[in-house]
Amino acid sequence: MGNKLDYSGRCKLVMLLICLSSLVHAQEERRQYFPKKMDFPENLPPKKDVWIFIMAGQSNMAGRGVVEPPDTLSNSRILTINRDNEIIIAKEPLHFYEPNLTGLDCGVSFARELIRHRNSITILLVPAAVGGSSSTQWLGDSLHRNVRLLSNFKTRVEAVKKYGTMKGILWHQGETDASKLELIRSYQARWLAVMKSLRDELGDVPIVVGELGQFLYGREKNDYAMARMVNEQLAQLAVNGTRVAFVSSGGLNHKGDVLHLDSPSLREFGRRYAHAFLMLEPNWK
Image 1 (cartoon, rainbow, N blue to C red):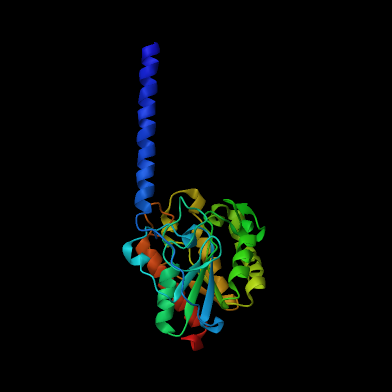
Image 2: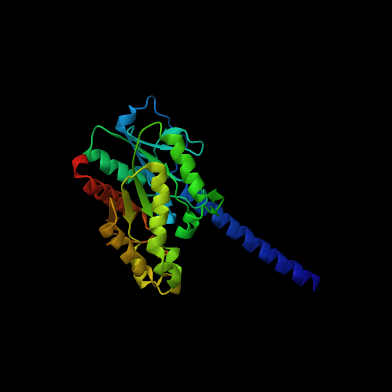
């Protein structure tokens, strides 16, 4: 019996080691094209020429895509911040709150498209999205995945506002709220309350809100059967709200988990965010 137990224990240990090795390999592969060092700008443009955008919401804004070589090409006119609120040249991934999960987001593609239409500006992207966060948690300034959501937002804003002009909020969130009917019914009211809190810090800036992935409509899991209802409310906000734009997710794909956008879709989403922002203020084109 002792030998059999020893053999069984050895088998379990081998399987555990194989699983750990696979996880390590997956993490190494995910980080293959992550920046190896931070690059700091030599000089910052005048404050009036720096447009600041805050990226907020949950995982599809925080980014779960695979970072590929083109995503690492930097542009001195696209900046971001590091964990210590230092200004650095932007390279994907931008978010740093969930190091074992974060990946490509839509920020750099948004900025690249925007500077194509306005060649005199520099974009400063401020990452503030945390995966899995609900609108209720944002409204209540909850501690979520070791981040105090609204307080963190305020801290990042305070750190960067001296460098430029606040120009907008890039928001993508709602998958978590799509899990229960009672949350869906009250989503619009909570969203408005959250945006008021964010605008209290930034001023009356434009808000660009992304549609939840339409691939969620076909998901069998009941938690996401009502995603369409959340999207309908988000679209209505853009109709009734002040300086709110809605970005369609039509034709975008998930990365295999029927939840998170894949890399090509995130790049396209960023471009759509940029065009939606420009449509809010035509004189900025």
